Length: 637
Image (cartoon, rainbow, N blue to C red; front, side, top):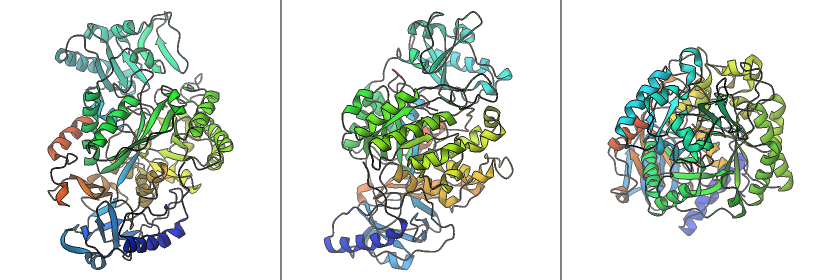
């Protein structure tokens, strides 16, 4: 359970009370929760906020001369901020906040650069990113033959017998747009299993060795919620969709604890270099959670991780309450799939796909089973996040949430992940279910070349409908779904305010009536993300008493293409500098910490992990599969 937020009108009163208590007690405190992210209220117009009262003791750090987007509805913009330890002690104009500088205070002039509350990716796969760094990338290749050529070269450098793992193929980029078969893979690599994940993560392409390892033959039936693609004779072609992926992935050797930790360290460096102070890690198993706890306990986790355990693989775990947080890591949520993805036509729709009239998609979890799982999770004290992309999938999730709300009244922060296509009839039902819309702005700009072909001109109007969510006061949290999409949240801000690609197309934006304002987009990555994890009392707003988590940009923020030219100058978590583009020490204890980034390492990791996105389907990486235990990145979309 998490506390209900107060209204925005109470924020200024609570801030003043917090300041008074701090002066009187000199101790740490937990501020009153902020208003929910459902009703964006931050203003676009600049103007410094009045300085909030603060303790008389000197601050550790003072930032002045900035353009601070505070996300505080009462004082949306400011020039300066100060913090001591891990908590903010003042926000306001330069003259007032400078008064907290003492002999040992580090004062930094931002020279007009923008800063926001620490950006949080509300739906991503950090472990999947780390695994993705090690695997073979076949993104953006425009033919099946080119993919196979890359795999053949990679096989020459890998130990004999070692599984060869890759991802990123997309048949929609190839001539004819047909799914591949195992024929070319077999000719290129026949001494080991080859497993290549489609860009949407909802299909794998394997060779005959992998099929034999899994015991998949002509006689193998399709599993519930999955499909084994077959040729005219009924023989498996080598492509397995959604729940059928697990038939192969159960056989893959699991990673060691050391390898899991290595992947997490590498991924964390990429994330903080992109300006992220926290992530919502979707769909991990207990082994990965333990790797996180080990890093967090050793102070080697440079950002906050709010994790969700993969269900149904860990269904029995629901009988045990969530474990307490370890440092910057906590896992008190569960992640469930209801359907597949639009890109591989597995998202469940009320009516058939426009470009596949006999297909409505898949139920990865049947609605009745979904309702039971949600009830068990809520009863056990777990937060629930459900992957739902098709409109029928979203409708089934709302049904399950309404049943859980009736059986267990309370504030459960139930989340619909992606919420990608919603029928008009389900919007008011989503409001009634008190559901959070956890959506990824870059999915719209990645999917817009083909989404209308899947959905048709009427149904597509209910797709990627951010404005619809905001106008109905549905809580909104923004993420990226990396490493499917690129990591930097700046790209999400740009997609949210323009609904255009990096070239500015289409002119005016794709279904521009669903665009957000810039402040609403920032709010999705700050206040909205904090609300979605029940942390709005301490994070998501630059205000006295909140945690000193900040993202500092290389310039100012504007709702246009200039966002794409920005870089991250500083990423600050708990008042500590965890990433810097320019050398600066915020406090003596920052120097030499294990969590400090090497810029060279971060840039190298980012070059390997990201790059120009080539998605052709809705996807997520890093989810546990029925057996994979996150051994390779897996998409959930």
